[in-house]
Image 1: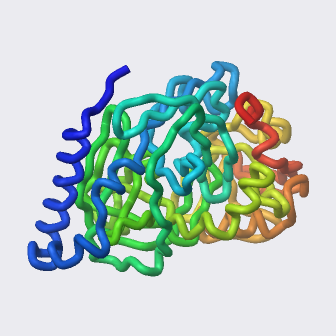
Image 2: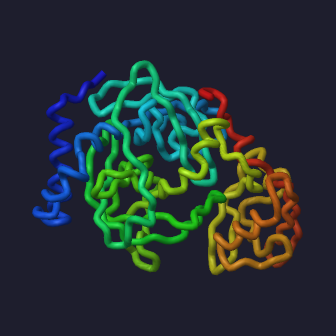
Length: 339
């Protein structure tokens, strides 16, 4: 076990102050430090995460069986917030504190709507936690800090360059996501922190267009303001207590308002209905749609998981009706190994 010395932690904390000073102006940074930013606390609240996933799990096909990322301690009981795909279906999870010590962790909850995962570290784990900030408190152009844990532990100053809707090809939609520049590679589960040391977002993706319509690479963060309304449910039940959205089990690519099926998940509702790669979805529930986000909203507006979804599909020059009996996505995942 590699143990990080206190001086190393202090050097990273000092680097945060330097980054803040460069971006805000040294005078402003010095004025803010005593009351607002506690860099040592911020550094120690970030953990590294390693997860082992059984090879026969659904997500192992796309995300692999050995995963690494970061997480953020958000309360005094060792509760850790991360991006869910890092630990989804994991049979073994380990977190590494800022001092390099490693601890086993158990899965508390996974929320496919927000993409968040919650863990709890065990066996004497102790670390300071970060307060959560509402994404409304940060504006485009603000300077923020991105912190990663584990072997990639570090801090980088970034600009919030966009706040906008995000639609993912894996049946995922955020009404508002946070986009930052420059891009960082250790993004999954990384902490996006404001200059008061509050947690604003959790790292999810590397993107090629941090600003819409411009070839500016960056990262997408999920705002932690999406956590507060569901946290009690996640802690009590391991999932949000509302009807699950209908899930098809397709990977989609948008082109000129139409959606091409790129992949069909094995044993998914889409596979059972006969959807196949190369199909073009042009209608849902008797309605046309303007793009990926609009498709999701019309799909989810048909009812909860289990509803029959009437798709209109183009195969070559033929328009074919394909009814798909949707399902609850979580039921297709092996979330029991550590629950």
